[in-house]
Image (cartoon, rainbow, N blue to C red; front, side):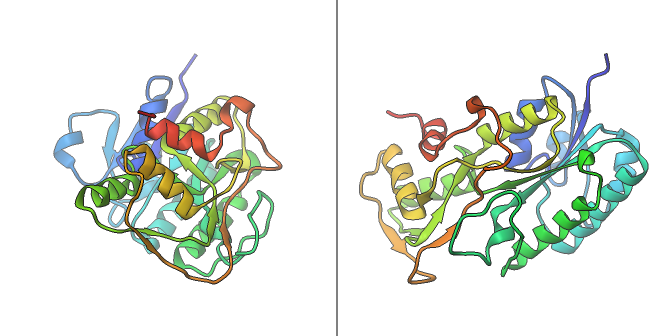
Length: 274
């Protein structure tokens, strides 16, 4: 039986690398890279793709994946063009597109957490970009798209954790948002969930975050504590006097219990207790 062929756009970014590591042993997995040509040129599973110059449709025609995963970052106009071509490709070929979206598609709603079928509305340029791409996918038959919305993503190699470690090392202040209520995920949990969803041919809209909520300041303090610093230097940033929610909670479409988790699980997984 032929292995499913997967193509990860943005395969050398933080999430793209985690997905490649998880899926590579089980599927015929390809990933794109843009920079670091020397590091990937000899690897037949990695293909060069510059979003600003190359056509995603042409690359899809060449690889013919059964599953396309978009973990692209960068120029917003180029992202829109790339996803337009992905959707055009799926209009003419079999396959499914998994799009990593964001809690920011709900950032105009600050008084409560958001669930899978809530209406999107964003005040940020980033959130509006994600909504625009989501709307492209929602015009596809549901079986052809898997739209996963993510909260803040952490991991022991994530930019967020590296910044915290660097600040602790240099005794610099870490920026926290005391009034921000959020949920979280990490690269390992996300990769396992995506693996399961591909195996089960799931489709539609999913929220892949922790099932509980936490204040941003409390979460960062706990990360610092587990890194060995009980009294980190914090710079508190207040964007509002009231609590502000930026959380995508799973409610209507739940994964099995072994793939559900809470905020503390994320911390324990990326920073084992000493």
